[in-house]
Amino acid sequence: MFLNLFTRRHLKLTFKLDFNTLVLMLARVFSCAIIGLEGVTVEVEVDTAPGLPGMDIVGLPDAAVQESKQRVMAAIKNAGYPYPRKRLTVNLAPASVRKEGPSYDLPIALGVLACMEMIPTQTLEKSLVVGELSLDGSVRHVRGVLPMAAIAREQGFQRIYVPQADAGEAALIPGLEVIPVDSLADLAACLQERLSIAPQPPTTFSGGEAWALTDFKEVKGQEHVKRSLEVAAAGGHNLLMIGPPGAGKTLLARALPAILPAMTIDESLDVTRIYSISDMLPPEVPLIQTRPFRAPHHTISHAGLVGGGNWPHPGEVSLAHRGVLFLDELPEFGRNVLEVLRQPLEDKHVTISRARGSLTFPANFQLVAAMNPCPCGYYGDAQRACTCSQGAITTYQKRISGPLLDRIDIHVQVPRVDYDKLSDQRYGEPSEVIRARVEAARQVQRLRFQQGGQAAAGILCNADMRTADLREYCALDNASQKLMRAAMAQMHLSARAYHRILKLARTIADLDHSGDIQNTHLAEALQYRPQVLF
Image 1 (cartoon, rainbow, N blue to C red):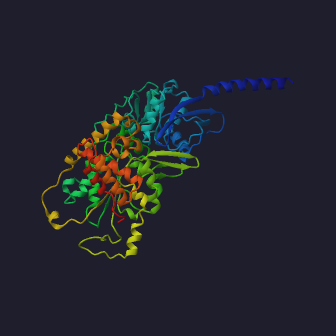
Image 2 (spheres, rainbow, N blue to C red):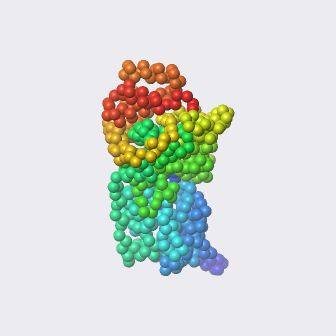
Image 3 (tube, rainbow, N blue to C red):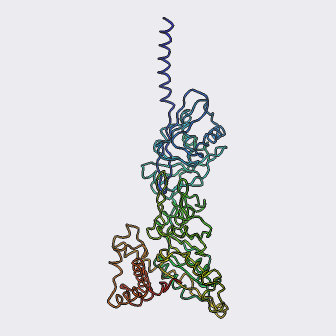
């Protein structure tokens, strides 16, 4: 009886001691997860308990997060700290959010050190921590730091600890102290106030830059194609070039970025966010200031073009956001691949649905496509006869559906260039001069949409205008209405084509510094529509 009483008292005392120990050995560090293009705050809770040494990670982690066990253990030992010989439980809350990638290594390691009372926990209360650990304790680059820093400021955190390689990217967010971390040992010493780490200075926006492989002055002939590219750049319109091989379609498309208007700071941040999440941001370029130019091969899948995967990631249409998506040899793309472009071209975003949920990525890009008129490429050429049968030509042309063609504002023929123009040593009009005209037209559009309140809805150029905006900014006089009525009857235009012609005419009027759409502006816009389906 005395033994049983002693045992009960001993067990009660042991329970109290273990409960107190449990409270003291629970650490909490804040990190971040990426869902789509947005960050979500994650609480990394680390608890120690008696038992066989090991670590359990819960909270919907993927394989990369599960592998943090070995990286954290080796990094702590190589940083000069003892690894606890206890049972560790790591909870990533909220458990309903999927955790992927190695960015939780550093916060888990700090949580383990805090449980061992090696670092003070109060210094991490208003801080967000992200970083991948090497086995030697150094901190490696992680993707998605920009949206992580944005959510840290939004949630009221005072500072963020990021890898040294990603500090410039995080410093794009104002009002947040960014601490670059080179190794776990340095960060632990900083938290113990044995070492001082200077915060990263803010990354500044120096203004959008122009970049292109080719200057327009190097392109011989094709003056009408250059004009169509200028109109497309001035209003953000989609364009299709049709012509024989070697006529210069690809050359002209690759010269287009040189005449596009400079990016604003908001556009640069939008593009940088997408490239950061896709892990395509160069380490030496924390902020993308040139408009993207994406030219995927025609063997690309529809998931690669619009995005996808078990957990959706951005595709080429999102990587071309606020830039150019160039599709060379358009009919060679799979029909299903081309058809998925219809919704992004109309809505300026793409929504990817999976069983676990749906994500929306921005896709406000300018489509520039090039194609031959037939399989051999010489259908309609004045100097070389076409060797394709009529059935082969029809089959080739039908690879592109009518609804997709209807969403392309400008259709332009690119004929072969004769010898006299190719051998001419004189330069054409340089890209800088054309870009100045494009910039002036875009400035008119920006002021117009800012005064009308459309800029708040993301409408920055004429191609973005909605149906209600056409009524306000694209009114036609009597002569222009007669011309449009005749064109609708003769060309069998759809309602979508009618609206796109009005947007195109508005851009031509802006290039001409005209407040109203004149008959000549509308006539030029109508010339860019295909008279027949090839």
